[in-house]
Length: 245
Image (tube, rainbow, N blue to C red; front, side, top):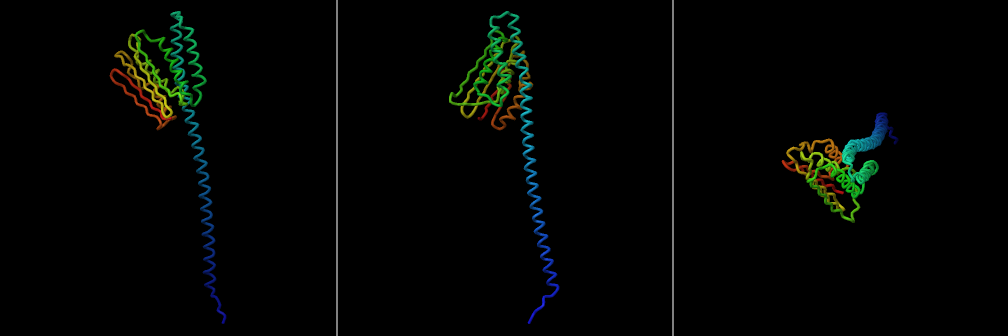
């Protein structure tokens, strides 16, 4: 005996088939949309990261350009003072200034330099400053660099603290009392500088453009890998900087 299917069964089956096809189409469309969105989002993130990188590099270059002229201005003043005195130290001072200028113009353009080069720059900078301070000044510079450690550092990152000490830690008679220590190992750089505060000296140690700039550079370059502590007491100003390599 043949059983005939009712029309309602055919209609129900057709509706189910259409629903399944629509559901599959919807899922495919949604998946395609999500995939396309993820691709676009990934591209957008890459563009944003590249823009952030370019902005950071631009900020760093701007900060470097703000620091350099001040160093050169101080050095030129020192040479001018020697020329007025017709000092025999002038030729050597000019050579030292030439080394300062070379580092400032060429080496400091790199992202990082060997820590020995930064130390050499500090020594040359202090040589120039010694020509400007009065007799009776006390300036000490001790360094302990691991000979087996090939350590690099962002250029011109330490100099602003030394400049700050000479600029603001000067007595009415022109004397300074400054102590600098640096220790370099394979894993970190420890830098410390202390200067005496004279009653007649300037009191804006931590608020100069150079110090604010170097704080910004440290944050941009090293982020959480650095720790900077500044203490301004009644008769002494101390800076302790630790950079993890």
